[in-house]
Length: 163
Length: 258
Image (cartoon, rainbow over the protein chains, first blue to last red):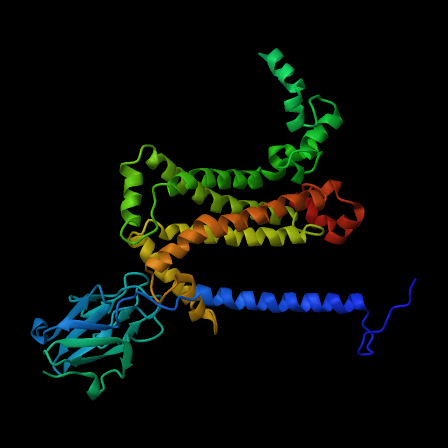
């Protein structure tokens, strides 16, 4: 049996151990790199999703004291005495589309029975949070626009738009 | 007819494929198992008693049976189904009403899927109450739990594919449950759907998961699961366990459970 040679740095690694460590180290780095690239690959960089800003049309479409559900965009346009405001129609529980119940004067979720007031305030769970208010304004053409990606404080003066 | 078959079995071509040869000797029968690529995962010898219905209720085998039906019906369904938003629902309806035998294949796929979920649970209950999960079979129980999860994920991903209201909202709710995971929940939700909402990317991802990734993963673990039965000493039978194992596992419980 030949005596194990010391490495050039004078440590206790034999040549075989050195190359094993070098090989495993390189493989680990390659594996981490592959994992990172795979993760990046799985995350889409461009999404072909609808714009968060929705054109809700002219304000006169919405009579006073009305709640109108926009099914395709998942928002309510509500014309109250204080002005127009917009609520998310997506239930804060698990994302189902809620519906306005005129006869009960409340917003109800068909999936698990959450109930909300017209102002989005929670009446009954399982929803953990009230329906968020969305930014609403009038553009130069006189159309109501709603930005679904921006929450605004509920019942605040600036969260209404007046025509 | 039998004579021709026997002659066929002596030909060089036949013997090159089936090397063990025929015959009813113990050795020949053992070789027939051991030299078959599919059967060699199993024990070459099994106690007759373990093949009786009462020992296992055949629940594991029946689960495999439903899985094979699902593969055999799923592949032809893929020939008519396009995983795209404009076509998915229409294709599903075509399979129901237009394609010859489409209704039969789709319903067979659907009912087998329900049966598989039921059988997996029944199999696990049987194994649990017999105490068959205990030493040395703990690892095979873990593999079984992984297979349970894969079964549920297959069921979940397949549910979206008809792209009807039921599917859409079920996946909306289900994926929102995933985002309840602490810290990385929203990331999981985003990666699973390939976006922020159930849409074209989500449909495609669920399709690939349902038809490629999950079935292949299932087959991988099923192979280990079967192989481990042999490696862990065959199908569990309390009375045939070594005395040391019986003592360690608590004999009284085992006897009653059996």
